[in-house]
Length: 264
Image (cartoon, rainbow, N blue to C red):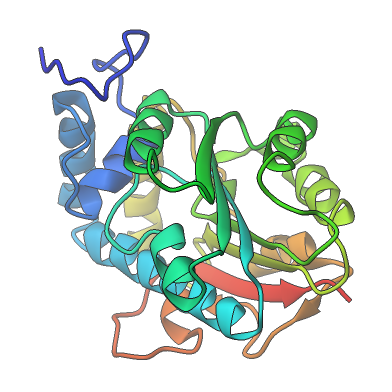
């Protein structure tokens, strides 16, 4: 059994975690044998999963840089996962050292390690909470963020683990309703749009692996992803795959939609 100081005693390291599997895909070290075994099963079916995770992370970096250039200096990162190189606070505080960041995740390892990493950073913190618990998250975020000024809300690779039965659309709308004009919403979301018959069969096998983790997949279409941005002004080029959103280098095509919108 792996015993490390950043692992809370309540964590079941024998059950795969989507946050720790994602950490593995990104080349991180905050994962356990169960996470690696599940992730390797996915890689056998879909060898490009690590590249997709990296493209997703690259999108996040581009978004934070763009919003920082637009004057946004506050970020609420929902479903933030385990800290890796190029995290939101690193990018935002490069642009503005006083930028504030609140990370939110319900994975104890992610939050424990985040707060250890941020111990000497007074403008960034991590909250242990489920993004679906909007009232609790907003209350915790207000301790660090000033909701009278624009906030960039980041929901990266998280909503495809929230089923329709939990009404993720209402949760996203509630977050944006609490924020002033000039705030932004950035989302990435897995999709099966445009898959070939073989790819669709492989995707179903991947979904089965995730069904044994702490979250099942809730894949959505372009139209369904569009609903998250109702009432907001989409930035160009709209809702596209993450490799097509204002790329700054060549990346392979992915099955992940990405978009950013501004609250009018």
